[in-house]
Image 1 (cartoon, one colour):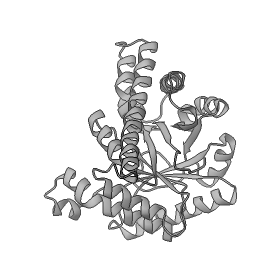
Image 2: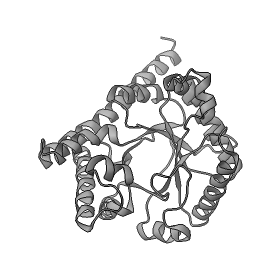
Image 3: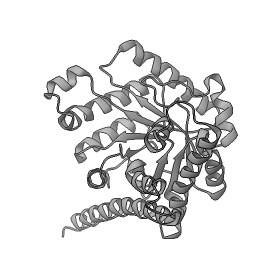
Image 4: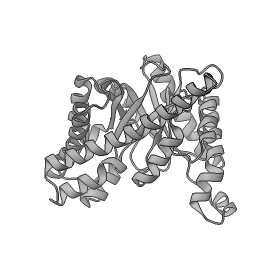
Length: 316
């Protein structure tokens, strides 16, 4: 994907594995063969929602998905054939410390599916355990080097969980942590990975409440000649109102180009479908509508800002 000023990326994220099976199906441990079929079909419903959204006007060039090999291999192949931007996870699901899902064979799995991006989810706090942080940087540098050597690209999902001392500074208030502390930690985290030669093309970061914080993250992501690097935000399973606020703050910030949102879009429709409150078509319709809604919020905010900038340039 090029990184021109008009570039956007709107990804529907459903690469969850452990949380998906436990949260939606109540399955603990390894699913049975029959359960795998049911889980895979649920992921197919989400993909059908994305396809419907494209039929209804979502920009195909920007439409993407994050889906896993374990339960979404057929969806991944269909998405690749259909021309969607495809990202697939490399990490083991549910671990506090990044490690490879398929060990030393990670490259074989990437090449077998040929996604647009290999994706990693990493929990990292620069003030966290030094040995754990070093181990993560080392593994991720190995991945980044392999991807570069094979002409492949990295989408890096960065979560910055609070350390106890950091929460203590804000009286245990996680909203204050998100507002007052996490933005600077996000910038520091990106810088530490860059220093370790971890070079994503896209940084996927948690939503931020202030435009100036988005700008700081983008400046770090694009520092030292990394002009083609872009950033997107994730939804964190938050409410529609919360995610829409983040999108309005992000829209138009140079270096930020869209989102990769999952549960906020598909969780309730899928839960209702599994409970037989919705039929398959209605669940697909609801997922498509939620996805389109996020795109519209982002595009409308970006359009308003562009109009303001144009008026300013003309002295109006």
